[in-house]
Length: 146
Image (cartoon, rainbow, N blue to C red; front, side, top):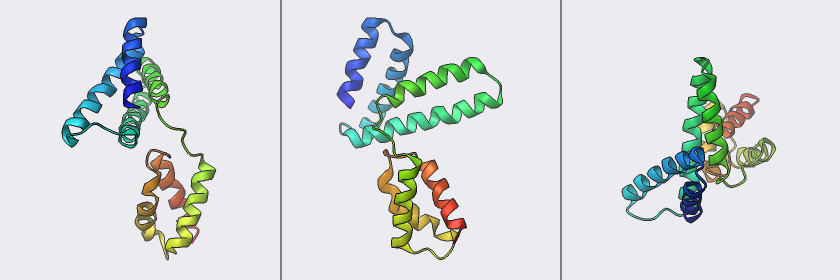
């Protein structure tokens, strides 16, 4: 994934695709910072988590721009999200997440809503494969029915 991003960065420069180039430069910067912190090159799992953070940040910004009624910023941020999502592995659907949550609930056997942390800990293996805010939402819905 790392090599693909760097290769696409060069292609964006050659094609003069300013929007893609800008997004990939931001990703490259974040990637380099993470590599400096970890003192090693990032593998695909770590790259997926990094891209997930980048997407989450932009989605949060998108919500703020919506509140401020800034359509121009909403459009550019939505375009950045689309570019970033091209590099992410296919995300699990809500139905797939719900099935996994059901499995973990049977395993953990929670007694009340306060056991959500135990369930989320078991579901941490879904990072990068599923939107963790959606996972949390589904866990809370299922626990409210207990």
